[in-house]
Length: 208
Image 1 (cartoon, one colour):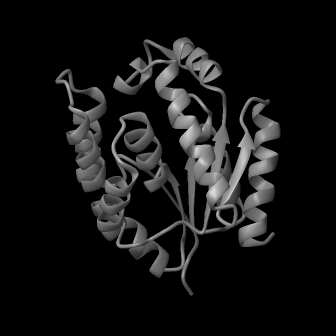
Image 2 (cartoon, rainbow, N blue to C red):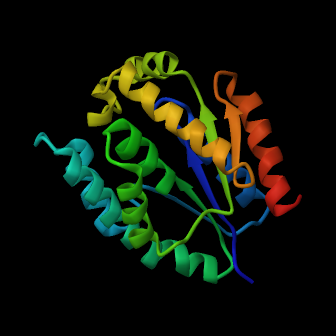
Image 3 (tube, rainbow, N blue to C red):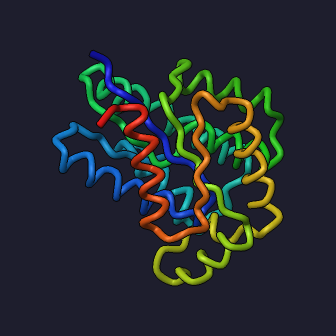
């Protein structure tokens, strides 16, 4: 029996990574076979690409950024996501293809048609069974990123409010266009309240 593929999306600072960890811990405590992963960085190649992109001092031009993420995703899908789903596991990824539409499409200004074509090549059409989008206004997300600076910073933290406002708007547009897959969660609340919503949506998909 094929497993389920769940993705967590949101602008930087939305708290999605914290919520992913809480969900994974909960599911594992119930005996669910879960694979927790992320983009970029879900494979050995992906971890190297993540280091180059997020941590290197070299300027990464937008076109290279788009293609780096596509390369990471192709490797991720082929070597980790598909085999895990074929083995009946629940795969939960911190970011996936919607992030490219939002960040490189709306954020960097690449045409949507081009971005979708690159995504299709990288994913071979694999889409999540459910996507949880953690919605947070850009100014509040930047405030959270400012508070964490010095310990977990990367090059995306340097982007401003205008950039993240475009990215958030793109996510909201995708959510509106695909309501059967997307679940939008208000991320401007206490962690426990957000986790309760996450749990409810995942129970909807997986059962109790």
